[in-house]
Length: 212
Image (cartoon, rainbow, N blue to C red; front, side, top):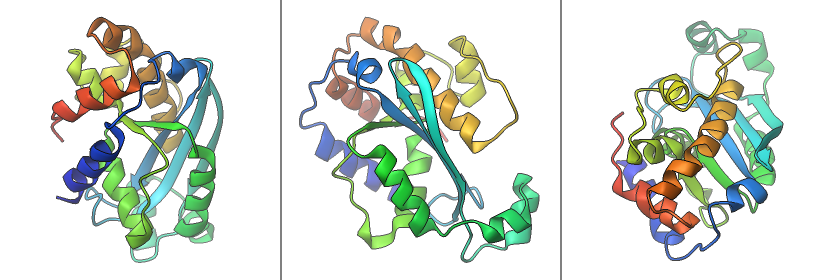
């Protein structure tokens, strides 16, 4: 339930009013984020990798990409499951330090993610009771894709349906960058659906239930 509760809190705080036009996602930019967890349960498992890619003017920019040292999960098991280096995981910075860098990058920017219902509880668990949702607006591109009839069986399925290129090896950075490109590719379809502002997008994603 933490995922639904967290998203409800986000929507209640942010749908009160954000009249920035859709075009602000291009002109003002945004940050596309992705996380990798130690297991399939985001509210229970640990974040072990994070990526956050800046998009500005409709183009990809620099990215924060970092492994995160697990506290409770078995490093060897996590490394084997995700094809990571156990040594690199052991040497990775702690979650508190990575979150500081993530928050600095995302400050005052719209955040987009593919499947916010997964990512939000994973980051909420990582933050613990000090979570602060107020500073940023978060868009779920998977829910928005579903709202305009684009397949949402997975990141690559959605990307291919929108002619978004998916290149390179599977990684949390690739996931974030492709999520950002999907967000840009969705803008004409969302406008055709009647969306004009970021508030419209938030209201639209709230109405869409995306299956896990």
